[in-house]
Amino acid sequence: MDFAELLKRRTIRFFRQEAVPEAELCKLIDAARVASCGANAQLLRYMVIRTPELAEKIFYNTAYAAKVQPRRNPVWGVTAPQTFIAVLAPEGKAEADAGAAVQSMEFAAYNSGLGSCWIGSFNRGAVQELLTPPAGLQVRYLLAVGYPAEAHPVQEDIGLDGDPAYYLDEQDRLHVPKYTVEALTSWR
Ligand SMILES: Cc1cc2nc3c(=O)[nH]c(=O)nc-3n(C[C@H](O)[C@H](O)[C@H](O)COP(=O)(O)O)c2cc1C
Image (tube, rainbow, N blue to C red; front, side, top):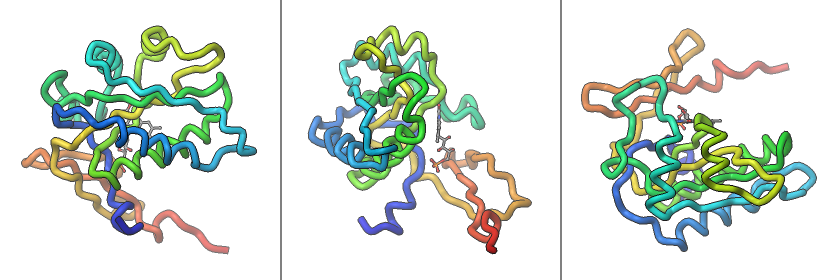
């Protein structure tokens, strides 16, 4: 996939009920492990959750698509992700590293025909308790991963006078407005 195509990646929130092979999941972590990180300290760790019982418990502690509630809420056993990758970081550290790692995994997923949803909105106490990461590490983000079960979202370019809120059209297709380069950039 060339870079312009890769940039068409959009967040996917409905997934087919089909397991993602371990080798495919390893490719995502392989992309994350070489992402930029402060001082190359490589403080992040990863946990793959794919046993159905645990994935279900994690799912019920995550939130989706706040702006188009409840139409883009996945349903367990129907459209919900079956796999999550937890990004583990030391408390108060490596926030930017975690962002770079998640973004790399999102691109790797898209490149492999997978969809993904970066999840920052989750019950942190409950997820921490369910996953019991190694001492000193916290679940910073979750990435839901799976084969897409929704039409690929439409990107729309908007100016600063446009509304960046994503929305669903009558066909239940997600539209994701993005500000243009001109709108976002000043030059000196
Ligand atoms: C830090 C961060 C946290 C996010 N948390 C959630 C979340 O909890 N649930 C969700 O459905 N989407 C979440 N998203 C996905 C955003 O809603 C999505 O990236 C945004 O709407 C732009 O869409 P795009 O990824 O298709 O460009 C998160 C994204 C980021 C960067």
